[in-house]
Length: 114
Image 1: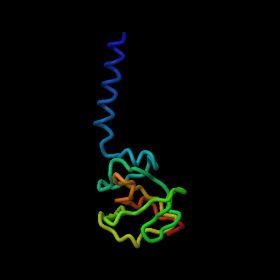
Image 2: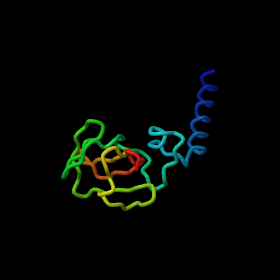
Image 3: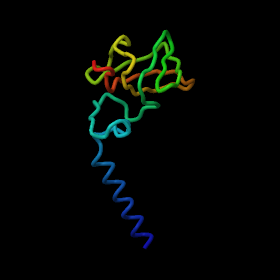
């Protein structure tokens, strides 16, 4: 009985791995029906709305974070976008380095009706 259950679980996991390749885990967390571009990462370290940006600091979902000097920004259309495109109210995914600085931001959805 346990062998059969284990086989079923393994088959399910293998099938979900192969059938779901086009949808990232980050995408599923944000909005399952939204298709994010292939240049977005498989996983984000964080996801949320920008509440404030000033100098080398950013507040996302009430959390103050430091921005790395090597920050990269991407949109759905461009892998290399300007930081100036980011605005308060935008929904973003981000990655951090080992000291907790944001190293990459991916614009998922523009805020405030833009």
